[in-house]
Image (cartoon, rainbow, N blue to C red; front, side, top):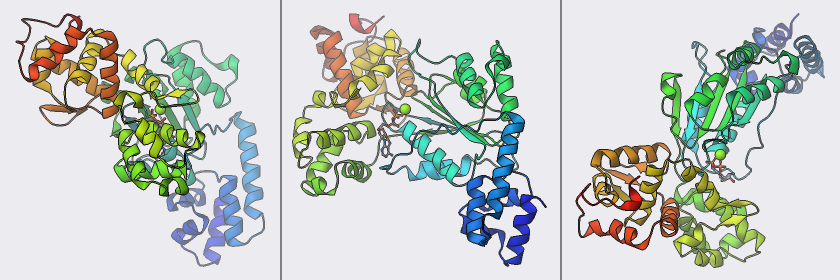
Amino acid sequence: MTFGQLLRAYRKQRGLSLTQLAAMVHFNRGHVSKIETDKRPPSVSFAEACDRELNVGNTFTTIASALEAAARHQQGWVQPAQLPPAKQNFVGRRDHLTRLDRLLPGDEQSLAVPVAVISGPPGVGKTALAVQAAHRAVNDGHFADGQLFVNLQGPEPGTAAAPFDVLEDLLRAVGVPADRIPADLDQRAATFRSFLHGREILLVLDNAANAQQIYPLLPGSPGCGVVVTSRSRLPGLMSLVDAVRLPLAELCQPEAAMLIRAIIGDVRADAGPAAVTVLAERCGHLPLALVLAGEHIVSHQHDSADTLATELKPEHARLNLAEGDVVLRNAFDTSYQALDEQSARMFRLLGMLPGHLIDAAATAAPAGISQDEASRLLRGLASAHLIRRQDERHYHMHGLLRAYAADLARKLDGEPERAKAIRPATDPVPALSSPLPSLVA
Ligand SMILES: Nc1ncnc2c1ncn2[C@@H]1O[C@H](COP(=O)(O)OP(=O)(O)O)[C@@H](O)[C@H]1O
Ligand SMILES: [Mg+2]
């Protein structure tokens, strides 16, 4: 009798439906069904749950352990479990998680590998969300053959990991000996896909630079799932693969306050609840800023959030939020440094314009460029998640990014340029006729 047949026999004997057994062992119904029909091997943790719930000693655990050892021995397969730890203090993102819960296990009828792309500005929580969703899927009994996690080191050109090197790491991680790793990119990609064939593997590709970087890494078998995170919207991806896009924005006010509270603890939060709210706002509800602020309060042993909230009143002070070697400003630097010169100048200009809402047509004059050119640059900045499209005419810039852009403008653009940049609000400068020297390449 196979493991599946034995499980089915015990289940029937106890008068349990598949759904009931699934609920008892805390795996989903589809997973239990696949094991009963021997379509997938049982994991040891699944077998332990069956032994416990059906009260049959270690009957199932013994079989599952033997099956697992045999499979490993036969295939040289090393089951990777590379996910970083999930966050204890994870807050919010309920809609995103619900979509990922549904998307990642894939659709039994589909031949395509589900690919989810989480994109957003630096520090917004892309990696945290990807890791959280991945752990949830594994906890639900999916991707039992392993989970791979790779930092692709985008978006700066020059630092982004080459697919050729990444594939070598991935092949080693699943147990391919060094002398069997091909010396050519296409063959490496093909070997990787062959190794994943018939297996249920989750691949998390963190911090992708562009679509071309991730394409060779994608598995071909429908049992696999992929989560990509990127600061870019990854233009061109849709022509390569059908991906589901999940753009990520900052947390809402209650979630932001909840995150600060979780880090500083109830006693400090209750000593100044209003200060927690102000602090969350001054951090622009951006998770990275919130975490740095919370850790600062704890490490400086403040009694409440009050002192730090006051210290962060000036916008530029917020950019210096830092704990250990993580500095908020540095997270923005990598996105800024990936911009071409014209886009970088436009970005700095946006820091000088009044208000958080950017009127697309009105940026052309202070930039000294045509409206078409201004629109193109703004679209590029939105694709890099440095601004967000609000409607046909407007873009929105996050407060911290605006403070960062203004800070750069103060350092890199002279006073006359800045004065001219702000002037069009009251005294329009004709486009093209008097270009701002520092804003035109
Ligand atoms: N939803 C969340 N709940 C709790 N902490 C979060 C959440 N999102 C992000 N964080 C924390 O904020 C910081 C920045 O998040 P991260 O995922 O690294 O951002 P990104 O990948 O977008 O640059 C990390 O310390 C992370 O753990
Ligand atoms: Mg990240």
